[in-house]
Image 1: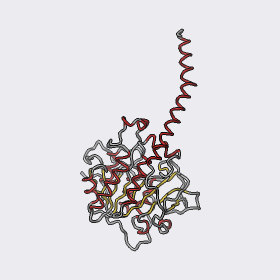
Image 2: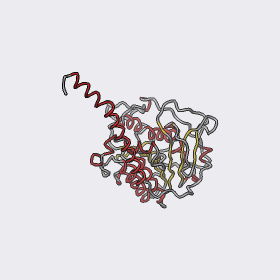
Image 3: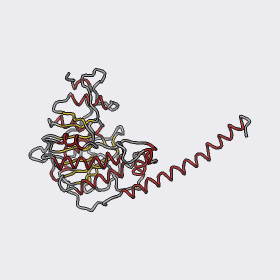
Image 4: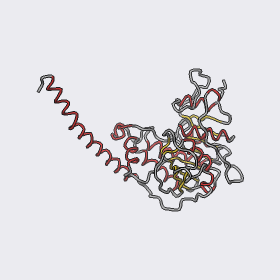
Length: 338
């Protein structure tokens, strides 16, 4: 049974201006991270422009199941999002995972670019206990952000058509920054493995890449207007909130700009009037990476995470001594216990 896209309201769409290229490079695009908030925005924008796409999903969805209400709302489940996207024209869902090489080969078949918009989810404090969160676990950040990226590269190398990867990561060259420490501590070293995955792309000469390092996606009421800014060569920028639809637009548009091949783009927002309303004029000026990126930062990221864990333990010890123990003594006194 064909589901109607009108069953759920679309997310706010960022305008996708025509690029300076004489023709589009987006014949068919593969998307990974399909049901995430960034992935669904990218698919909507590709669909709006009439670009066919193949979208990776981790579990099958029965579009005939009336218990699944198609939706792409913020709080929609993965099944709801997949059901909504399945009803769109020119959208093909491919069952698989970034840890499954065969499914990636099927995904990129007949595509000319892949948007790798996936990422490892938060694992909480068990990230600090390796036995509870082993690196070879299927949802560990190493498998998603590093091994998964290598699998995508391998699939593209074997493909006859797909020679472009757009990968979304984040600022990861500051292992001792507060954001890096917190994300590494609570996300199975996600920042660290994201950077190592970036290096896999830079070291591969058979497939072109564009790495996008966005600000914090998701906060409400992010300003719009002439606020969009980019720095190529992985340039440093102050971390700001950015909209999912804007970063999706950046990922989709850069495919049409050959000058963005083999580039690392930092994408943040600036004060209104200091940036651009669309990414088109910014993308036209992008240059390929020219600096030497650190070959690896894994060791430094692990040191930063250990430092953060030490500070956390010390803080908890202070709280325990200052609050928990006195309360315990007070309760014992009230109960007449020594």
